[in-house]
Length: 383
Image 1 (spheres, rainbow, N blue to C red):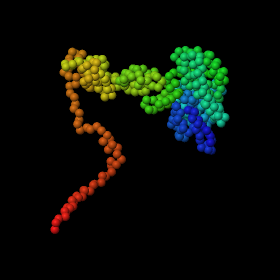
Image 2: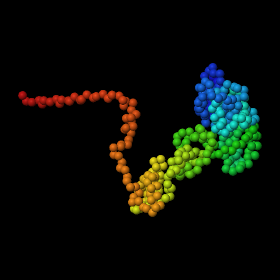
Image 3: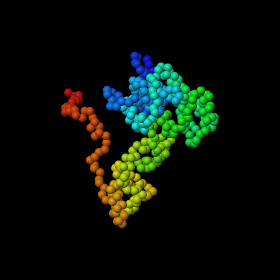
Image 4: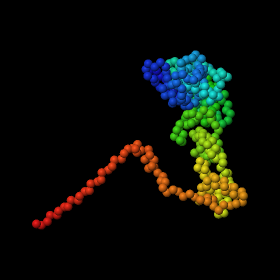
């Protein structure tokens, strides 16, 4: 039984007689890429560059200079500075060019590091030892940082595959002088130390978790580049400005606030301004809320209360604003309200009937029920 390891450090096994160590559950890795040309016998364009993923969200491109027959899920030893590192192949072939273009990497202008070999059992064993040291190293480093009174937080530790170097990811609001910290860490762990600063969103992506939507965090599953999110995104979409609901697990505004922002901006292009007061002969009306995709604006006669609100179509609001600009006040806010159709019944009955599997079956005619004859009970009489 040969062992293989996915990018999360989970040990997997493969059937006996297998030639190579391959991660069977390749979709378990964060930021995994599906290879659409995996089963195509002759891919359109071939390349000697592969994509390798390491712990959590760290990926890099390497050149397969030795033309090794690599496939997705295999564990390989790649060039590092210094020594070598161990990672999992996440993509090969034609789609690597698309991934490099997406990441802004130009293979002709960038000097890519090389793939040394497929990982040997000794390489995997040393890699497992390095992975087992990461958690204890992080806890011990946090204690040292606390003793030195440094204003920083150690979020994660990643050992190199050959166990000669470790990267310490930290979060800090200000510039931190950690020269003394590096000396202490180098003496205690006997490895090369590299400090790398990350943000709160990057930390959430490396740790992972479940969001308020019930799904895995976007930053740990598919987001590569983080775009700044502002409260204006919530205002445009008419979302309540509640900090507890708008903030994600990282403490920042949720990245999903930008997902539908362009659609809302495009839908609101011809909407009138909400600070304009509508004047009619009966009262003044103030804007309260907007239903963007139904193109309906709600107005109330009280600027500080949402009582007695009236829904007005956007076209009617534009018409009233044009009349008010000419000095004309319409009689009412809405001239005619279309009565609701009483025949339309909202419910789940019609939906269930449409999706029923037996809706096309012929219904059997029921036989008329036999009338029961009431038996006349004779009372015993005197004869």
